[in-house]
Length: 288
Image (cartoon, rainbow, N blue to C red):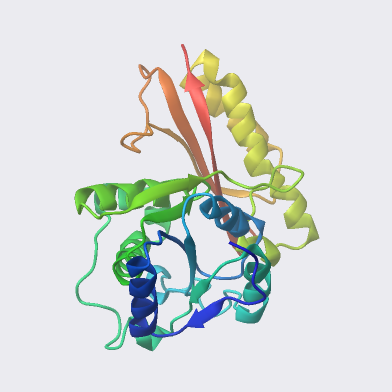
């Protein structure tokens, strides 16, 4: 598809459904990229990839209140729809679905919701109770509204990706998940809309997350204890980083590996710098 100057923006469910239905009648395939807005190169990598997979691309921009807990940064989460549209237009995105909170939740937060289960209560879920219930519920709503053939999610949010895939499998939703690799700054920091909240010292210290992941991956051939110790040594050298967790989990179940585990695993990390919470992950191979 050729680039357009500005995607068509829909604010109502009825409008986007009618438009997508017409595209389907014309035989076109649909890809959906759900976002909270404040788009950056990580989001744009989704848009470029889905251009190879579907005829029509829809980007949803909705700061979903049900995935933010008490005391979290809902009010200050960056919102700039016009800036987002300027980024999407040259990449040929046809449609943006940018509903209001009242459109998505006309009677307030829904009484019916998707629950993330035991894994949803671990790691990010332990730090942000109810977060993944809110994520899964809004993703289910967006999939039902747009009815895409493909939905894209980023590897950076590894626990979210795991839970979304499980929900799609559990509920037999007729959509394929396309996983988009983490996009990083030149120094290795994973791109995130929250990076803009870091001051200069915090931004330099934030490199610690990816450095610790690299250290764990390099030591994983000596076993889990060596991998965790290597990561811990990195964090001990950076006092600005308040580590929440650093875990190595099984990709198929997202539970922590035990001492006997061998093979492909995933190191996941969350830490706070000032008031900004960052997450990251990297694949590791445990061999001894």
